[in-house]
Length: 258
Image (cartoon, rainbow, N blue to C red):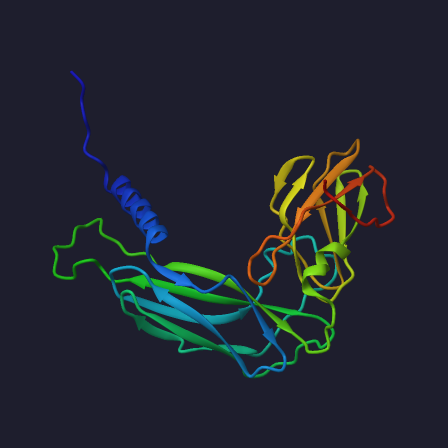
């Protein structure tokens, strides 16, 4: 006779967690973009939020310096900020079901470079209320805050280069398995849909005027790298490719894919 065991409290919590994560993917807080440009000559920018769920949402927003998690292997020193540069207002509010609102990002201080972009993160956390506040709570009932991270690119007014051309100017070198990618321009470049010998790699970004070194290739043989990037509206730009020999120490350019 087949025996069944009652689910343990931990398994119940895991099931509830997965169901909540699934439900937030279907309906929840919609943010009007994942990448935002902040031109130097503007006093503020706005970001639209919409609650597509059937519950109130407590929303918390804040702007922080980039934590460099996508810049691993950068050779040069990355910027740090000792004072607040941007604030988001309102920082805490309730968004009703099927309603939208706008938050504003304002620069309030700090010294930023004028010859290159600076990168900041817009953090948005949304905590939905319980579906029925009068229902009986179980021991395994829980709430989770849905957290989102969006990029804010602060753009000095004297940068004349087309942002969509920056990824075409990347230069590549290789020493066995170590690949060095050099960004000679003033803008951050996202290595989107990066493939190394046909294998998808989490590419991250390359900071302005910086080198990144990563163990992406095998130690022997030709290594082919293909990459794309995203524009400020999240559109995917055309594929570029480069082939690197094991001891290709001189930085090389790119070739368009066929």
